[in-house]
Image (cartoon, rainbow, N blue to C red):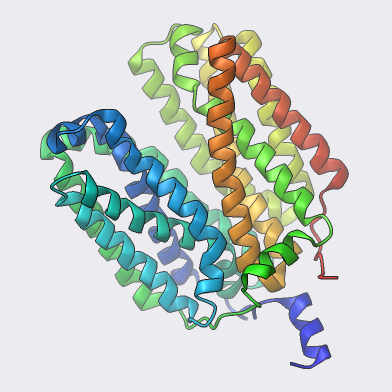
Length: 402
């Protein structure tokens, strides 16, 4: 490749289409919905799964942990290991792994096959998320990438709304194994829609392990990843302990908790589309404003959290603000690292997975040392710090390799 071609590759990245392929974007969104639904199902079916398999709930819960750990590792290596594969076939392969995973879990006679199935799901989730931003760049013109990403991430919000409550409700009627069979049908539908709509997408970028280090070493990229980790850490520190907060501080019963969380999910769904609009107009404002709002809400809940009505309103606003966060950060990496969007996507997914673990662990430590109100206060401070650093140090124009 000539020097001029290399420079053009850095500035433009993967070739964007002249016309948007919205049907392909919709099929990717369906794939996200199917993947996240499968990821969330064990949380709502843990007790009957454990009883059926003859294990305790703690051991059955490793189905969730296994998926998260495998997804983290996959996000860092998938672009390198598949650097010669057409991205269309790779995405179809992830959907096949989803189908195989759900079938293994549905027919698992014990813990071993259950965990193997969840390993396959972790590979599919880590790989799919790593490719999501780069795929959006291939399917729509550059100006429409934020809108495409908001549509894709709406699949996460939809799964948040429907997967856990429907899984719990239908699981009692049909049995947990049949719920995973229904999830298998959702995976089949996703695979068929992608087979019919996804275009050929040749691999781009260098996609070697050392590329991760090179991308992380570009100006402002490392700082951006740290800021993203701070935002997601602050969110999951609060959200992991939202139920005990509502029950002990606000005095809300289980019906009230379910209603408030439903409000969060619906607002989060709307927030993904709001994020696409805002990121398209001012990405830097979106990146900084959302954690600012979330930080203020975290401190507000800590100070005024004894009113169920006020809590419901603030949690819904939190959901709307957080809905824009993944869209904004995915848009950021498509603009700052357009030539290595897959490698940057892997780093972002890994950062988010690590943030989930850090947020839950740090929140738990604060909870045990003090109380749940202190968790919310700490979350608010972390998010306000993230907003300050983003305003002063994060930029959204291409960060070229040295």
